[in-house]
Length: 358
Image (cartoon, rainbow, N blue to C red; front, side):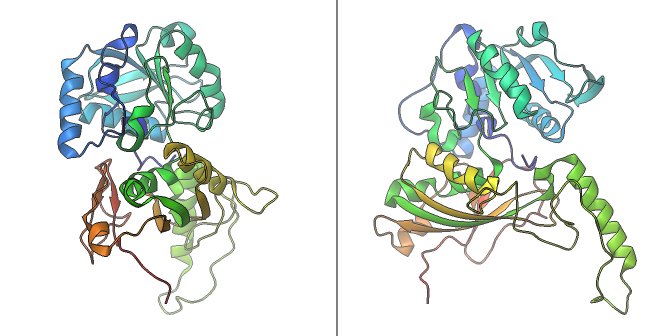
């Protein structure tokens, strides 16, 4: 998961209003149908969460990149934390910052986890499989960021701006989607509701942070060595050979069309994931999707270019008027970039217009 993309089930703390009663009560505010929350809606949700009972919150994987971003978001959005239980990504003792002070992050223990009201799993698939259903069966709310349960029919895969109605009082385990598909699912949801998306062709441009800390360190090292090797007078000379261990190929000053391993059909695992997950999030099992996922030399922030085939006509004026709750829509002729400050958890949508092949 790219830490520049906030964990979807807490994207704007939409979930806490439902969770605020703790594990002894149900989803207090759940209503049928998609919940469309813009900026004001997110603010109201955060206020309702603060008015509710404070929660004992556990974070498994708190010392990792995504875990640290999660703690930052919880603090900035004033999530009602009565006690924080951070657990390290490994076995070694560590600490994490929260509300201006270091908090010890020991290894995971069953007793500590089972004392929580809400548990975030931001570690590995193996850790999620070990604890996800066990904790949920005990009445504890669990939000899992791994891929362990995303396609499990019994586990809702939730983006609050798109399918908050998938939340159920008796489903305590909630999966967050792949970071690559999250932005597209949110940005195109309004188009899908209005005109029915039947086919998606997309290319993703994925940051190195999505491959983890070791990949970032490798990227920085390769970039420094390549920059030192370049002569002021010979910018086009071949760069020195590099080996890669965290990624399939050297990433400095390079791109490659592979995120994950390849299957027998020539698709890499990321391309398979985005198709299956978008179908589940949109409740569109017949959706056709073709993806090419590309790793690019960007530190943080994924980008997607998508072409949508619609079941019903949509005029340029109507398309321009559509708004994507949870994603900022940039005016025509402008666009965001991964280099722009990414303090906001919101996605961004730009250059949205009907286009024909000419």
